[in-house]
Image 1 (spheres, helix red, strand yellow):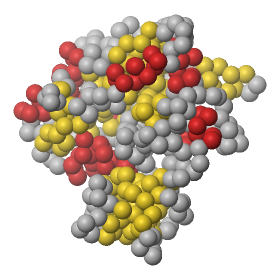
Image 2 (image 1 turned 90 degrees about the horizontal axis):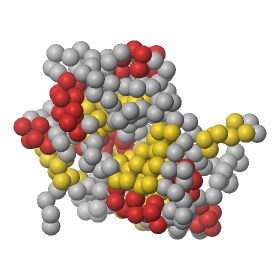
Image 3 (image 1 turned 180 degrees about the vertical axis):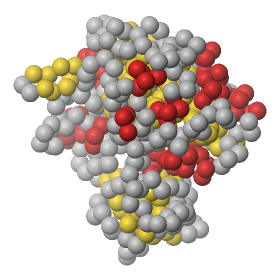
Image 4 (image 1 turned 180 degrees about the horizontal axis):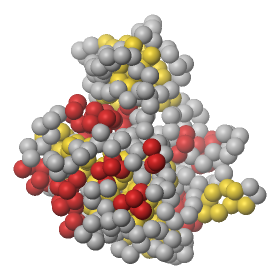
Length: 422
């Protein structure tokens, strides 16, 4: 077995005593000396910085690139405007999934529109080659160049309500860049930005792609940078005298934040089963009737024809205890087995007060609110439960009562208008 790959920041992680683990074929920081709890809370209250250079990046270019993505990617890249429609414009991005012919998930992804004939596709660690080969198999004579750019550039995630203020320290003309920056849009490019996309540079002139996206549910950005520039940028963002302050965060906090934000982990919460009856319907191109699709795409016929045999639902517990998902079962009140546990983590920013769940960021939280954290995640069930119903998660050591919910961590900031965050 070959040793795990390393991101360009691996020496920094080792030097700064990160607790390392293998994920997606890479040696990655799980947490730093501050601990996963502090890292999680920092993203909710201030800002945290993640090394995400393990993610895979694919570039599609050519006159057939749009049509190939329209067929292979679940999200509709046509934007309806009255009787007319237009393509998703440069500077916008979209979240969706790549499905197989049976409607099962190969991977989830974000597509970035550089121009009508140029797209970046960001998929999960270790999936670059697999998705490239999948796209090539579906090319069918379309004129498209598909290139795997994994390990050719670096990526950082700066997440938290102070993220925009942190960026003002390291961007050239920051107020110009950050003005009018909607959620799921981006600016800049690693090379020369296409004419329709505003150029973004660091203070030293280094070009970057800056995207208002992330995997935490909180306000923040993803930064794509040249490999040679990433260590300097990482250290500039973490300067101890910076105001506001930023701390490095590992994969443990990334996992607990994304689960509390109702976001799936590919190959765990979504996988080789029909992508239906789950909390992520927004990844499919539903028509206004919410029963049909606005386009045909690879796997769509299978989704329409598939018999419903599982339901993925979110849950939130009554304390911070977790269970081992590799051994866990879901039981109903009569102790009948109803399904399996996909994710079970602790969101350290939430707790119960009376019959409500509050976040440390909730504007209406009770006086003196100091959350201990609640377990949360996703279960895959044979039949659906109503919001508010109690199920039991059981492994070989314990049984936990949890409540089915349609949301977990309230008052998330990802969609906050930019003018409120500067």
